View 1 (cartoon, rainbow, N blue to C red):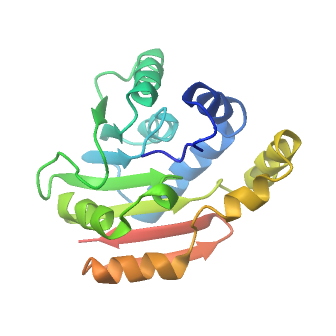
View 2: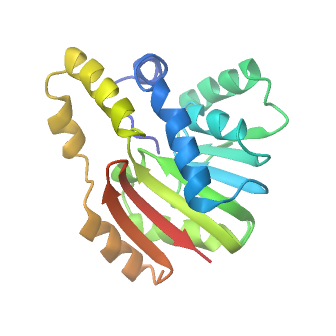
Length: 207
């Protein structure tokens, strides 16, 4: 699922993504490319929302993308964005849950997700599914962040104008490194790491 607040409807969430969070997507895409080094093959975005991160990363790589989300309404927005970006030959939507990914074992080169892991009900199962679909040599880069520090501060200032409690809500969304490590351990995924820094908290897996 996406990181949509249950109190916020999909259209409102998408408007925030376009008007407030837009600068973060290019920065995070650059971060993913630098950290994983993967620029070809198949990329799966779990909890893709409107596809903004995928569109940014598509502009930097030659990958084909599957945008997975359990919200049909959010995928309709993603389809619109794909068409507007003229990327319909490389970006495809997939209606499903991260806890049951409808792709073959070892079929994906890169799995990404930004902002949805906090809301996964069963992280052990989700991590297991992500690792299952990774090919040998594949990597996963999952977590939450707002890109470079200057972009983060720009977005933070805008969000606090909209919601003075935003920092509290954001910090309360289950961003717990030890919980992630424990879930990875229970999923028997040893090739993994959890790091927190200036660009947010990110979970990496590799085969």
